[in-house]
Structures are given as C-alpha cells and as structure tokens.
Length: 158
Image 1 (cartoon, rainbow, N blue to C red):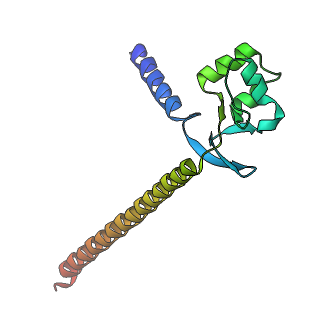
Image 2 (image 1 turned 45 degrees about the horizontal axis):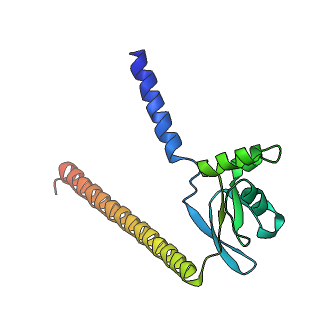
Image 3 (image 1 turned 90 degrees about the horizontal axis):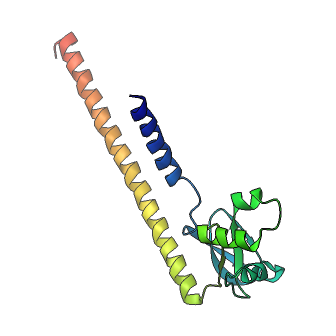
C-alpha cells in the first residue's frame, strides 16, 4: 500500500513539475535598438555589444554579432561566477541559455499576426464562457421560479 502511495505522489509531482517551469520555446517579441528579437519568457538578456556573444562563441556556441544572448532567470540568479566554457555548453544543451537573431520584417509580421489570432481566440473563449454562465444563471432562475410556483400552489391552492 505504501509503494502505491509513494508512486502516486511521485507521478503527480512529476506531472506538476512538467507543466510548470521554463520552456525556451515559449517566446515573446523584444524590441531593442529598432530591431525585433524573439526571446523566451522568463529570461534575462544581454545586448549584442557587451561581449556575451564572444563568451558563447569561445565555448563553441555560434551567436552572430547582432544576436541577443539570453539566460534563464533562475539560472542567472543562481550563478555566482562567470560560467566556464563547459558549463556554457551544458546550459546551451539544456536550453537554459541561447541567442536570438533579429527578426526579418516578414517574421515579425507573421509573429504579430499569430499573436493577434491567439488574442482573438482568447477573447472569443472568454465571451463564450460569459454567455454560458449567463445561460446557466437564466436556467437556474427559471428553475427557482418554477419551484416557487409549486410551493405557492401547494400552500395557497392556485
């Protein structure tokens, strides 16, 4: 019995941690010096001119001169010293550090279009939810009126 409880707890913990956390593929648009970049949510980023690109390139990770280097916020907060080349390669392989190139005008337009569609779907979903809640409330009100009529008939005979 204890094994089942432990396994169930472990499965729920794993499922919960898999759903919550950093995902480098979940990205937003960042504008810097007139350029648009797509960087993950929950990261710190480094401007192209501050030398972070050189550290990554020295570690064998190819970042262009105009690329923005990003690092997961939790990882950035936990680092006490400059990471070694081996650590940089490991973080890059884990998706905790990376670089983003400037978006072309077409990529930016496509991204903005996709975000607009997502916002429209969200608004439609919210509107549908409000409509369903209103319909449920109306049904509840009608049910309560019927109940009151039944009580009135029983008590007053009409």
